[in-house]
Amino acid sequence: MPSPHIGHISRRWLFAFLAFLGISCLHILRLNISVVIATIVKTNNSTHSQSRDSNISTQMCFSAEEREVDSLSKENKQAEFEWSSHTQELLLASFYIGYAIMQAPVGWMADTFGGKWLFAAGVIVSAILNIVGPVVLRASLPLFFATRVVSGMAEAVAFPASNTLTTKWAPDNEKTTMTSLIVSGSGFGSAVGQFFSGMVCSFIGWEASFYIFGGACLLWVLLWAFLVFEDPGVHPYISVEERNKIEENRSRRSNIKLKAIIPFRSIVTSLPVIAWGVSMVTIAGFVVFILLTNLPLYMKHVQRLDTVKIGYLLPIPFAAHCVMMLVASSLSDMLIRKKLLGVTQTRKLITNIGAVVTSGSLLAVSHVGCSQLKAVALMTTAMGGVGIAFAGIFVNAQDLAPRFAGTLFGIGNAFSVSTGFIGPLIVGLLTEDQSAPEGWRNVFYMAAGLSLFGAIFFQLFGSGLEQDWAKYNSGTQFDNLDDAACEKMDLKTIGDEKCDHFTDTDV
Image (cartoon, rainbow, N blue to C red):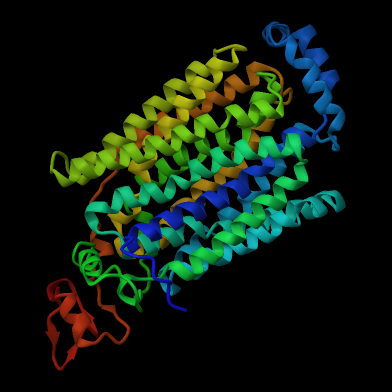
């Protein structure tokens, strides 16, 4: 069905905005469980008592925040489940098992079949599973674990699908900004989700957070279905001027359907790809997922915040993540557009700045003690640093291999999100007593070190240039291209046939 007429709104930025909202929806659904766990799990008072007696720094936290004990006790009386820290972390990690498994397959699917309906299907499945979540949770904890794994599989479509679509919709000089706008939906969704999850859990009930967010994401699917198209060439309402601007200023042939076998061997042995992958695993992986999944628990058990205050304060770090990603992406595009720096230099500079800010903030928060305001402020700068680094990392897959962007991102993100289930398990081991600051200090030390390592490795071996193996060579074969498509691709005629087979010398 054609898109309804909506005036002179830029169709490429409408796509980007709706993709941003889609990423936001999925992150709201993903992180709702973090706040819910802080609400429904009974606090182990005996552990707290032991911590008071046996640990000086933990004693400081309890005595400094004694005014919070009454509200936390009330919450504890309302909690339904008695889960150990290991069970809680395993529940948080279960989502990322499915999420990691599906990254490479959905990347290939997005490159092969397109990203629009793949993205929509992922949101539909995740939203429905979210809506039935409370019933399943009360019926069977193992079954709820299974639904979280399936939810992870469904949400895995988001970044590979949006990456594939962006290569079709973004002119080269807008690629960083558009990609970062879309990816910043992760920070925006996290901020909005943390805020409203806290409010809904406190004033309506934790079950309502599943129903409300799931329903809202299903409404997004309707907008996406009617207003977004796979490619500017098939959009019925895009202006000729905008279509020409996109097609004349994007990476060559990113929209051509290929029969070519994806060069997996070249991908996994490419040093720039490995450097990008290391930054994905460390900065976009361990650091992000540790903070995303565990901040509510840290704020509750160490800083002694109740669910209402968690809802008020935790959105601030994620809002900083969103804002700083957009600022850094705009700066990146400006540096490249004005030729102040090359693409490689820009990607490395932005990534390194973000990683250093993140590491410094995490080291500082490790020693903040029991000051709630200082903890939130330093977490805000840490997440802001992650947002800056994201502006250099997430677009790099499109730099290295524009026509394999979905596949490449899927492979890299598979390794990255594997830390989403490994990280929480490590956190669970380090924080058996969730109220003891020492365990969390080790968590933040680890995250800070990984952030710096990822930045250094990317600085040494990363690149912002399209790789030779990603170009049209080695006898790449195409699907039934007409003369107009061949002419647009600037390919030479080979015998009586065009575009059937060609090598480096043919381009």
